[in-house]
Amino acid sequence: MNVLVDSCLWIDYFRGTGQTETLDCLIEENCIVTNDLILAELFPPLYLLKKEPLIALLRDIKRQPMDIHWEEIIRLRVLCLRHGINGVGIPDLLVAQNAIQGELLLMSRDHHFSLIARHTPLKIYE
Image 1 (cartoon, one colour):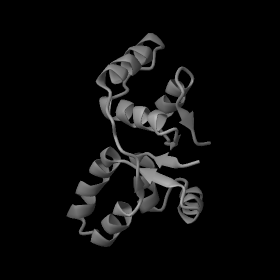
Image 2 (image 1 turned 90 degrees about the vertical axis):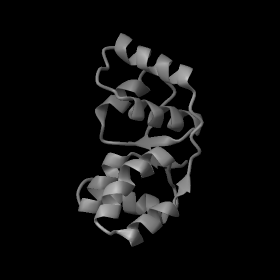
Image 3 (image 1 turned 180 degrees about the horizontal axis):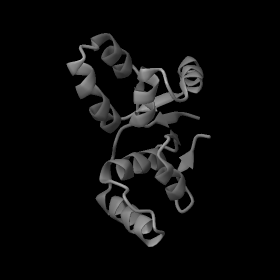
Image 4 (image 1 turned 30 degrees about the vertical axis):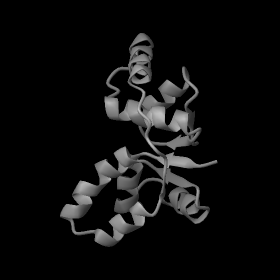
């Protein structure tokens, strides 16, 4: 199954911290997927740091198209609030929706995704 890697894990990976071995394995197995939102979060600092080769590598990763359903985002936001899952921003709701739609595993260190997965079809990579 393909794994959508959240931007926070990519940032850790570039710094040489976090789950580097796990990401290395997923990269070798060609299981990594990204989307335009995650790339939009990653690219600006990489451009400023003149990391064009890294940007080129990230562009080569399979992309999950983002088909945004705003009513679903609203429903997810209400669900979060109803279950006391506070502070989840729209970008993270879009990432969750994208993972659900694409039937992808989501890999993130953000705990709120695990909480969302308890109440939705979101599947977390463990």
